[in-house]
Image (cartoon, rainbow, N blue to C red; front, side, top):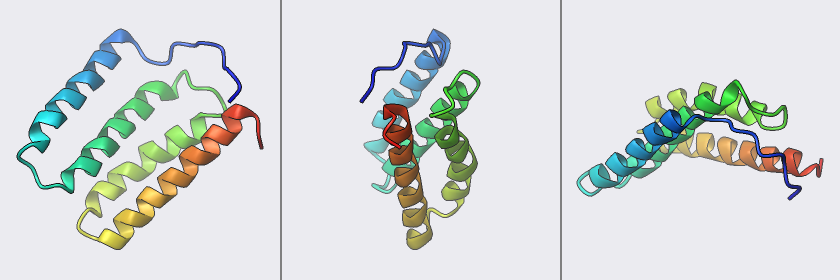
Length: 106
């Protein structure tokens, strides 16, 4: 992958907020149902995407916008395994496209 110029996309306060989410989620997962793990990872993805959006590159912005739009819908579909899986597939395809754009391999 081509190396991109190091541009700060989140502040230290935002990073600490995400770290708190990661650590508290890890503890909560010890007593929660297994299917909460993906939900917590998607919550972190949505929050990080929102934090990055304003300063993101044109190559990354489409994925961030999709994550911000799509993940709240997925939270409501958690009990519909097919719809939830389709949402995960959509996001995985989108992050793959993002990586291709960022590497200049389009």
